[in-house]
Structure formats: structure tokens, C-alpha cells
Amino acid sequence: MKLNWQNTRVLLLLSVVLIWSLPGHAIAAALRIVGSSTDLIAIAKEIGKDRVSVYSPFPGSQEPELWVEEVFPSWIVKASRADMYIRIGLFADVWAEALIADARNPRIDPGAPGYVDASAGVGVLEVPSGSVSRSLGEIHIQGNPHYLLDPFNAKTVADNILRGLVAISPQDAAFFEANAADFKRRIDEAVPQWLDMAAPLRGMKLAAYHKTWSYFFNRFGLDVVGYVEPKPGIEPSPQDIRSLTAAMVRAKADLIIHAPVYNPKLPQAVARQVSEQLGSPVKVLKLPAHVGGVREVKNYFDLFPYVIGALIKAVK
Image (cartoon, rainbow, N blue to C red; front, side, top):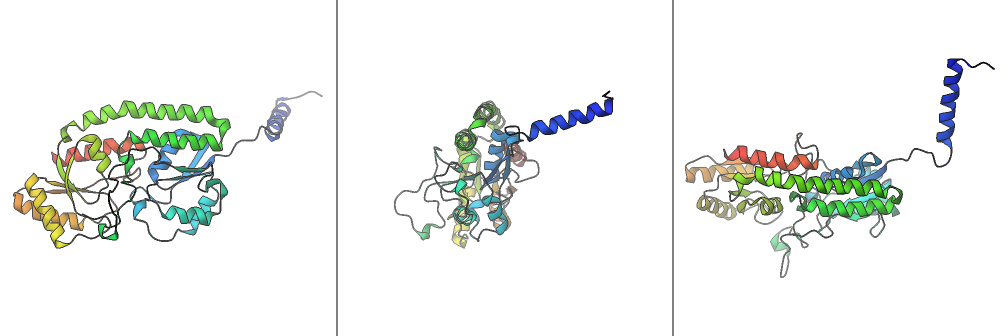
């Protein structure tokens, strides 16, 4: 039979379909990863690339540690289909325990290969000592969970996620390992640049709403003189406001920062009082604490230049 171009084209297409329908030639589905924060899934995407799909219940403008409500059915559906769940740990995402239990997915149960505690091995700040009681507020008994606001901690988190990915998909180990190594290399290259960028801020005195920024302050050398919320999760009393105002006046601190999730009303009230006593303006600045907290912060490497740049602009 004489073959023309159309016949040849049809035969080629049928051959391709036949080859890809054979065992061992199926197109692998992306691994489904759910994480308690946008930062965690952003790092997972850096390592997994197109071999993973990622989801977090919260946008970057919210704060997972503040969630105390029941988990939503849509979250449960995602977790029930997940190959991996990445937790913040340090009791910051206690709601995730209910989510994982309700999902009834053995792949992500604690102890399973698809269960990852991203905080493992992180040098944790502000671990409470002595007796801990409710009078201290909603204190984190295992320490401050905002560890990804120190970019060097992202390397530890990447290693934890890498171990999980290799455990659930060993055939992709070389791919994941290369991507994790590249991610950590880029962190090592970026941090000195960010430190140089933040040099004008070193020693700067400021106040914050919540202890969101301890790791950032520690890495970049800023000095917090007090908090609008002196006890986590507890509204400040009039005496607390007076104490913070006095501390800011003594230090001549003229900036209060807060994450998007917090209402600026109290910081603005404090700023007015401090401004009256200093005789100069005191600014209140909203800063993203997570990937996606503002439109411009699309990935983990966007977060630090944005925050540093916003701080520098605020103090000019």
C-alpha cells in the first residue's frame, strides 16, 4: 500500500498513543502537597518544581497560628488526597491535627513518610523557661514559630521537605536533591546581599504588634523596644499602652510594624501618643510576614527584599 503524508501522520500519532499507553510509560501525576503556611509550600515548590502541586489553607496575609476554628470541608478534601503534609510545628498549627485526623489519609499521618514537621532541627528562639500558665497569654511552649523570617532557617526546612519527598517518591530523589541544593545555594548567595541592603537598618529601634519578627530582628540587627501586644493573643491594657509609649519615647523609636492580619487601630493610637511626646511623626507600617502577604511577594526570595525595602523607605 502506498502511504501518503496523511496516512503516515495518522500512523505516527497512533504509535505515540500506543507507546504511552504501555506499562511504564504513563505520565506521572504531580505529588500533591498540603502545607500549613504559604512559606512551606513555596519552599516545597522550589524543590519539587513541576513534579509537585501545592496548597495551603491560608493566604499569606493571614496567620496560621491564630486559627482556632474548626477546619473546613474543602481543606479536608485536599488533605485526604495529599501525598504529603508539611506542618509548621512548635504548636503553631494545632488545627492541623484535626485536619489530618479528619482527612483519614494514612499517607500523611504522624510517623508516615508523607508527614513532615518543618521545624525539626531549627534553632528556635524564645523557648519559655520555668512554669507556663494561661496568665502569660497564648504563649508558644516550644518557642517562636516564625522561624522562616530568618532566611538561613529555610535551608533546614528545605532539608526536612527533601527527606519527605525522597521518602514518598524515591525514583525522583536525584531531581529533588539537585533542586534542594540549588535552593540552598541561592539562599547562601542572597543573604549577604540582603544583609548589605539592610545595613542602614542595623541598630534601628522600633516597636511591633506581635512577636512575629524576632528571627528577622535577630538576623538583620534591628532592636525592638516593645510590643503593642505584650502577651500573645491578649489585648493590651491601658497600662500596657502607657508602658510601650514610654519605652518608645525613651528610645526615640518612631516606627511600629505589624503583619497584615493585625488591626492597625491600636498601633496607630500608640503612634499618636508617641508622636505627641517626641514632637515628630511616628509611622505605622504593615509588612508581609509570609509569601503572598502582599501581591509583590510571590515567592520566598521576594519576601526579604520587600520587607527590607519597605523599612528603609519608612525611615527615610
